[in-house]
Image 1 (cartoon, helix red, strand yellow):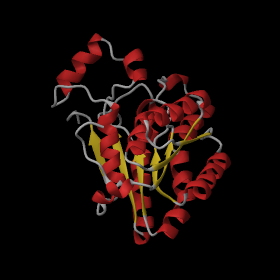
Image 2 (cartoon, helix red, strand yellow):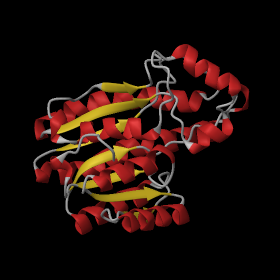
Image 3 (tube, helix red, strand yellow):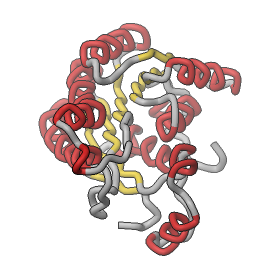
Length: 255
C-alpha cells in the first residue's frame, strides 16, 4: 500500500464490489482487502475472479469471497447480495463498479443493443443499491459508491449507450442519497478520468493518446487504478461521514 492512508473504520466491514475481477475493480478488491475489510466481489469472469481471490490470500491479506454473476440477471445479483450478507454479515459498503465501455457507432445501435448497454452499465447499480439497503439500515448506516466516468462531462463521442448510462449514474446517486440519507447511508459518485488499466493500454493508449493526456491534464502524469481506489476507500470510510450526493473526479485535472 506504500505510504498512503489506512482506514481503521474499514477493518472487518463487509464490502460488496461488482465487476471486481479486472481493471479498476480488481484494484478496488485488492485495496479493500489490504485495509482488512471482509470483501465479496462478483464478476462474469469466473476463472479470473477465482485467481484474484487466491492471489490476494497468498499475499497475506484477507481472502475475498468471489461469486460468479452476470449483472444482467438481476435475480442472480440480488441473490448474491443476500448470500454475502448471510456469510460475511450485513454489507455496509457497496461499490457499483462493473461497466462495459465497448465503442459503438450511432448508426449501428439497435433497440436490443441499447437495452443491453443500460442492462450492464446502469440498471444493476439501482438494483444492487436496493438490495443492500435493508442490510445497511439494520447495521445503522453505510456507504454506496457508484462508479461514473468523466466521458460525458467532456462530451466524448463513440459510445452513446455508455455515456448516457454514466450520466444517469450521477442522477441515480443524487436521488438515492436523498432517499437513504435518513438511515445514515451515504451515496456518492466516483468519476475516473482516463485510467491506465491493462485494457486501456492495450486498445487505446497509443502515441496520439499519450499526447492528448499530457495536453489535457493539469497534472502531467498518467492516472492509474490505485489513484481511483484510494479515493473510493475514503468515500467508503467514516472519514467521509458527511459527504453524500456528490461526484468526486480523479482525472489529473482534465475536466
